[in-house]
Length: 507
Ligand code: XMP
Image (tube, rainbow, N blue to C red):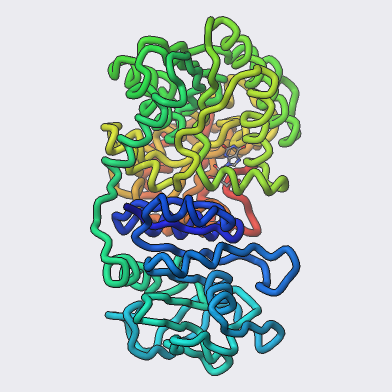
C-alpha cells in the first residue's frame, strides 16, 4: 500500500519520495531496473518515474520494464520519466530543439493532475529533450511557446507525464499536482505520518542491531540527539553514548545535553572532558585550515580511545542525514571535509558496522521525528553549530582567555535573542572574537580590549545566506549587555556581509 518511485538518477527520486511522505502517503524508492515481479508483489497504488540526466535514446540510458504499463496502476512520469513513458508507449522524444531550462510559464488544459491550479502557472524545467509525438491515447495537457507537450495524459489508463519537476519548490503548484496524482488518480488514503515513521525506524533498528551493542558519538547537535533517542527506544541499555567535550562548546552545552539524556534514562553515557588535549594542541596554531585539521584528528583519536574502553560494541551509529550524503560529494566544502573525517575514517579504522537511522531524512523531518520522540523544542530547534566549535569563531590563536570571553558574549547574545523573540526568526546567530584590541572608556578608566562581532543570518541550507535585519533597539541592548558584563571585550560590531562572498563562519 504505497507509491513506488522508480529511480532514474541522482537526487530526484529522493525528493519525490519525500514530497509523497509530506502528503501522508508511504513511498518507497526502487531502482529503475527492478523486476516486474517485484513491482507487482509490492502492490503499489501508483508508480512515479523519476527524472534523471540521461536521454532516452542514449546508449546505456536507464530503462524500466514496460510491463509496469500493464499492471492497471496509475503512472506519473516526471521529466526523464515522462520522456521514457512516451518512448515506451510509442511516442517520439527529441533532443536539440529549443531547450527548456529553469522557470517557465505553462498553459494548462483541464486534466486531473492540474485540478485546483490556475491555467497559467510557473514551473521548473531542467531537461533538454522533449516529447514531439504523443503516444496513442494521450493528449497534451500543458504547453509553453517552445514546448508543445509540457505535460500529457491518458486519463482512461491514468497515465500522466510532466516535462517539468513538480517536486521542486520553484514549481508553484507542484505539491498540488502530486496531491492530485495521489488522491485523485491513485485514490490513496493518508495513512503515513511521523508517528508511523518513528515506529518503523525503531523496528528497523531492532532488526538491524539484533542483540548486539551500538556506540554513538553525541555532539550536542540535533542529528546525533535524535539518532541516539531513536536507538535508545529500540535497544535501551545496549546503546553506548560518548560525548567528547573538546572545550570549544557553547556555554553549558555539554551539561545541558548530558543532563537531559540522563533524565531520559540513558544509562551508558560518558562525557569525556578532553579540553586539555585539544587546547594544548591548538597552542600557537593560527591558520584556519590547520585548526580544523588539529581538531578533526584529535576528535577521532579521543573518540577511538573511548570506544576501545567500551567492550562488546559491534556497531557505530551516526546521525548522518540525507543532505550530508550529498554534501560529502563536494570536497570543496570545509564542513564536508571535517564530516568526511568523522564519517569515513572512523568506522574504517575501528572495524565497526555502521547504522545511520536518519540517512533518508531531511533536517525538518529529523526535527519532526525528534518531536515525535518527545525531545523538547529548545533542544530540537537550536541553531546549527560547527564541529570545530568556538575555535573557528576566534580568529587567530585559540587561548583559554579568548574562549572564556567569547563564550560569555555568545551566551548573552543568544539569551537576548531568545527573550526578544529573534532567536526563532533567524537561521543561525553567534558571536565571534576578533583578535584586535580597541580603546574604550569605562567609568573613569581607559580600557583596551577585544572586539566582539555578532553574526545573524537567514538561510535555507547554509549554502547561501543574507544577514538578518535584527531590530536596532535589540542590537543596542545586546551590545550594552555584552560590554557591561563580559570582562575583556569593550566593543561590539554587527556583521552585514552576505554569503557569498562572505562565509557564515569566520574561518
Ligand atoms: P560556512 O562558514 O561554510 O558555514 O558558510 C555554512 C554552515 O555550515 C556550518 N559549518 C560547519 N559545520 N563542521 C560542521 O559541522 C564544520 O567544520 C563547519 N563549518 C561550517 C556553519 O555553522 C554554517 O551553518
